[in-house]
Image 1 (tube, rainbow, N blue to C red):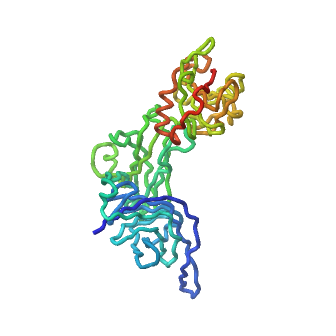
Image 2 (image 1 turned 135 degrees about the vertical axis):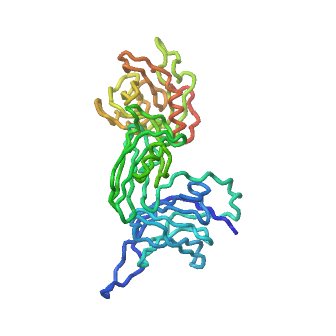
Length: 413
């Protein structure tokens, strides 16, 4: 028997009116709203988060999914290899379906109970004669965000401390009866409890939301993967770590406390571009990151803008007091005036401007400084930002490093 792999190629579909017509009991005809499949994830019996096989359960998310009763695996051209399978569960935004035997490579289509069909998805399936030919089987995905009583999902797979998007869990009671629940946030890996909520009795069909600000006991938590778990309240002891019933649903996300500020191809300066390099009468107080002029710059850490100005050597610059750090973050040689003003609170990852070469700069680059408290030229001291930059780059950088074209282009700061 051939084994099947399912690969989510992604893409977004616009909703297209369905083509089937259903007759009403009054003799008229109507079209129910067509669904639109937006994404697919393998949830159980998986070879990877986006790799499945016959018998695996897939979760399809999209628009107007409540009326979906079947998913059709379309296979190749024509209808000869189409395989339809009934959905196991459905919510307004998702359905769960079991991958059938005989499903062939191709796209997916949703069909409502009255026959209305969605357009073909841009999510496709890839088939290998033997699964081992495409690599070893990956561990099963721990997230389980659908049960017979609850459906849940995190809003974003990656969130930043003080970012524009918070860590948020949305969940819906999908059964017929109200359900009393408890929610816990844990650190994935070791299961350390971070925070608990007690929403109480939740009515069916009403979407609920829980937000988390990235702190525990007033302190920013370490970077890593975290997981929301939703328990029936009778199993609150399990949430407290005393064992008992497993959570009904769980979904995880990655939490980062900084975002790499240069959002495009870049390279790190060497020689005179490094922290501490000699300058007439002083030493270089930051590190230069080279990128094309116009490359977007964002706040590495959210905070309050302390300074925004133009200076003959620094060019257009902005200094931000980083929330929860005690450190100041300075960005220099911006292409134009910063897009934020003194006194503004900015979010981690918020656009500050663009890489430029204003002031006394040779070549387009960001001159980046980190200062200890009490702050930039207010009693603090500059320290080498390169280790931090490299760490942020590894976690949240954008693309491969750009080979330097002008090794001698440095900031005089």
